[in-house]
Length: 117
Image 1 (cartoon, one colour):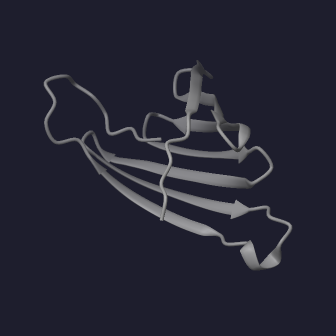
Image 2 (tube, rainbow, N blue to C red):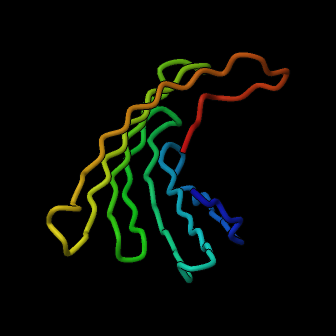
């Protein structure tokens, strides 16, 4: 088995747009140039309510669409769920993915809320 080092370059950016005092819109884009794969891009957007709960969706350059949901249970604990639906034309390769992440903020000297994704 031969493993070769392939070059990969990524650029990621995003913005948070307040939609009043309790709502915000979080959007982002990621561009990746990977040797042998070309340019891969991902866009996503989430609507957040009171820094407590969010729902969102995203698209990955023709390969998948995904849905996101998150809940900040406390300032140090968050529960997040993602569902990926792959758009492959080959039915035997269409695998959908469910992902559950429990995030803990353990050691920080700064005040921060449990925000992931």
